[in-house]
Amino acid sequence: AVVSTQSGHYGRAAGDVHDSLVLDRDGLPHNAMIPAGALAVLSLIKPNFTLPDRFDYLFGIYERLAGFEGIDFSNATYLAEKMAADHIYSIAYHLMGHKVLPTHCKLQQTIDLYLQLNSIECTTDSAATIAATLANGGVCPFTAEAVYSPQAVRNVLSLLHSCGVRKISGQ
Image (tube, rainbow, N blue to C red):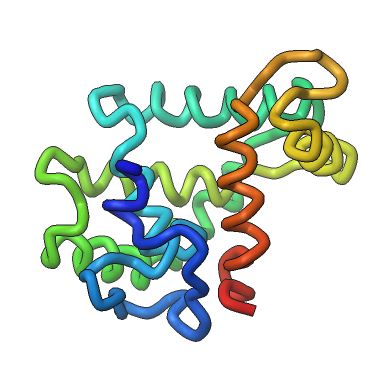
């Protein structure tokens, strides 16, 4: 519920607003699967942690979803993303100006975290394991660890199905 108050309504397709500064009629990003929504959600995740600890926390989730195989961080991709991040900065400042982000948000850290997460790489095997973990109700088939609750998985899969991810959001 907290996420939907910051990133728009679950299941709302974004269509052509993937990289836009357009907010919905409630003044929120159209969904969490586009940059504006992702920034809003990231502003809520472990906000009192340091940037390295926030990244490690989220990277750890990717590793757990993938059964601790085939997940890596590409510094070259991160640096390239950072050099071309003007639009992400403008979206973040737009969100801050419209009071979408919490007042305690460390904006630069949230932008850096977004760019770092966009620089995570995985093998096709690890991507398949992530999909299998989601298909298995949040339980990794190789480690038997419950990474997410079945309810959380249902919400994620519904959002992915109805909204897509990034440029295909809304299709």
